[in-house]
Length: 205
Image 1 (spheres, rainbow, N blue to C red):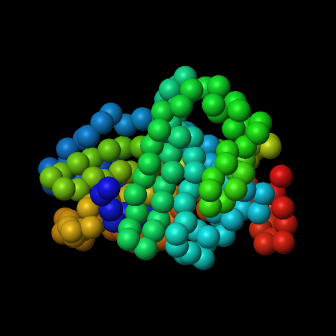
Image 2 (tube, one colour; image 1 turned 30 degrees about the vertical axis):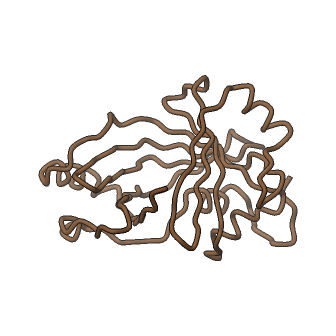
């Protein structure tokens, strides 16, 4: 199991072109073609994963089903786990019937109990790689409530993420960029936007 560091930075919309150009000039090569990503996030009725993320509790996790380029026939169940040792991800390919079942009956997790789909997150991702570093740039990030999917909430900035193994440091080239490091979770930010208010005593059906 490889533990990794994930540092995230806000990219203002006016700076996207500059940053993409800079990454190419500094020999960060495209790892994949940029692609559309959709994630369906699960949580229990008390939104315990959301509150654990907000409070920075460990161990904690996020559970989601992800697909690419709107291809719902090729689905991946992912668990992002944040432990005291570090962060890691478990990915498993699933069938469309599994998604239908989890949407109706819920997904059971040993830590959080029965979890239900709460949020749809969609964005377009650019991928870059250089030696031991991976960089992704997520643009056009938007959120939908599964109970009222006609309402869409759009972030007014993009997110650049640097992913490295724990025994390496952040590449020095990034210090030249107009970046502000933040603690950011698409799931947490989406929940704040699509639910009118967050109340720890409320049950979110």
